[in-house]
Every structure is written in C-alpha cells, then in structure tokens.
Image (cartoon, rainbow, N blue to C red; front, side, top):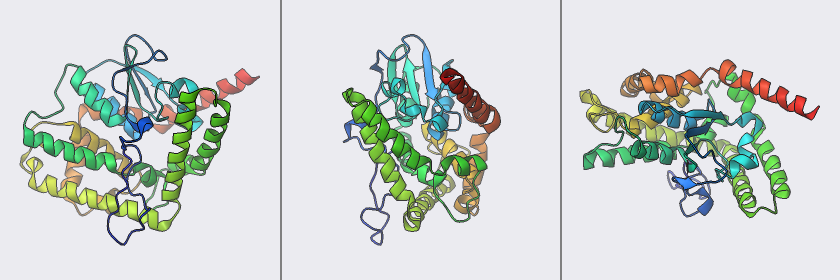
Length: 325
C-alpha cells in the first residue's frame, strides 16, 4: 500500500492525507524487499506470513493459488500485534503482513509480492503481453493500491454498517499500537534495525490516527474512493469487460486480482451500496471476480471469522497465559 500525499482538490487542507501510507519509495524503510536473503527466515520452501482477514494477505494468497503453488501458512495474529514481534520485524521491517519467503529469500509489500509470484513461478501469466494492456494494468493497480483502506476499514463512516469484528477490533487499537511501539523502541534501542523499524512504524500509525481523527479527513478519503470507483466503472463500461473480457484485456490480470480483493473488502465494510449501487458494471464485475476459483481458495476459504480468527486467537491467548503460569 502506498504513501501518496495527494489532495483531491484545492478545497482540502494541504496536510490532508487521502491515500495509503506505504508506497513512498524515497523512504528506505518503506521500500519493498524483493527476493532478499534473510537469515531469520525459513531457508527451505515457500512460506507466507499472513493474517486471514488481512486485505493484503488475501491478494497474495489468491496469487499463489492462481498459480497452483503449494505454500506453508504462518499466521501472524494482528489482534495480538504479533506483526511487531522482533522475530517478524527482522524479516519485514515494515511491521505489516504479508511476507513471502522462498528458500530463505524475503519479498514484502503485497503488490510487489504478487508481481514476484507471477515472475517466479509457472502457471497462468497474470501480466498481459501487449503494451496497451500492460499500461492499463499498471494504471488500475496503482488506483487500487493507493486507496486508504485502513481508514475506510476502521474510520467512522456515516451510513456504513461494518461487521462487529471490525467495530470491536478497531476500537482504540491504533492508540494501543502507539503505546506498544513506544515500548518496543525502548526495549530494542540497542538493535539499530529494529529501532528504525519501530520508530518509522509509530510515525505511520500516528499519521493514520490523524487521518481518522476528523470528519473532514474521513470524508476526503471516502470521496477519493468514490472517484476511483467511478474511474473503474468507466473502464468496465467502455473497455474489454464490456465485450466479455476482463478489466485490461481478454485475460485475467493482476489488476483484476487486486480489484477483486478491494471490492470484497469495500462490500464487507458496508460501502458497496454507496460506491457501486448505481454502477451495475462494477456489481457484475465484482460477482465475476468473487466466483473465480483462486478467489474462493485464497480469500473466501480464509474469511470465516469464528474459525479463522477468533478460535485461533483464543488458543494463542490461552497458550500465552499457560506459559506465564
């Protein structure tokens, strides 16, 4: 996800953030790792560190399943803030999921990972061959990746009926992240790499809190999302999808994969009717994406909160309590 500081129009406050915070390649710690050797990672096999309901994890799982690639699952419990555990941050200094490990080599950032998966493994190609189709794919990948999904997911949006898990899980969680990261900074001040990672992450969490802290800020993020979905709708109505193809050409691409996950999240948090209730082309596109076998295994199979989140979380917490005893 990206750190783009764009304003939608001149009426917005200059400091108003409407885009995701993780794509600023000028910030070294935010620059994705690609096939980087890591002594702290498993040295054999394909491993994915992920969380079942994480949007970015959903993208990567679907990409692997589209390729038919076996992989080993490692759940990082976001409700327990395990993404800040030193063992994990030593692999992924962004302190986020997912992380892909292939034979001891680490790749981070969901969009970067799905590109690496497509380049590195056999199976259906997810990048078009034609220059025009590739350019369209890059455009729509950028639009999807730039959405400020964290604010959309956890921010108070009028009229959005969000799942109980989101309402409970998001309450005060960002403030707790600040406190936890401050403690980690003090605890690991003698390890420069961890210190830099925790310090930068705390800065990003503070910026997210600021974006969610005002009604105007949330309205700006929602407006940006509405404008982006309008661009998507125009492409679907006028491009290859209108004649039976996909978003950018005749073949399913990384842009379709990413938009399927994004639309699923937007619908899950109650924004579907607002964003595409009057855009039937988007509704048809979403249903076609949701019916894809790779989406069913990579996304839907991991989207049962009781089985995939609450039960493992309870067992993990019990295990920690027993360990303390």
